[in-house]
Length: 120
Image (cartoon, rainbow, N blue to C red):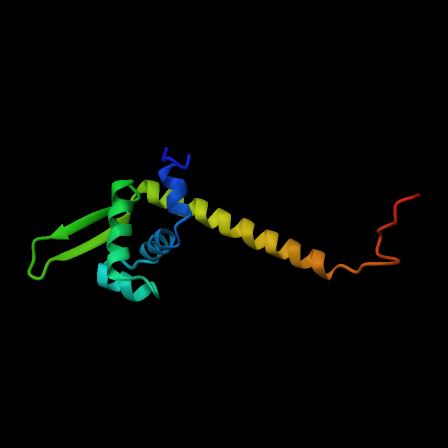
């Protein structure tokens, strides 16, 4: 674990750009230039850093062809697919919690709302 007590996967999940890269690759965007276009606001430097880290962690695989100009593509590994499934579960939970919070805010308050004042 890192000095903050967090493991590398927790850091990936907490990194906006890493999650964006994983989601884009899952949608079928595999080439670095296409990823840059598909992820608004990401710089080339940050994209390259995230791709390298995700490959080192075994979440993405990199394939390079000996062509001119060189062609590189990234794909999700089995572990990357598993992490994306976990991210989907987190997104579903977040939506559920937001819906519950919205329902709680819309609930009527005061007399007749099913809440009682505590007895003295």
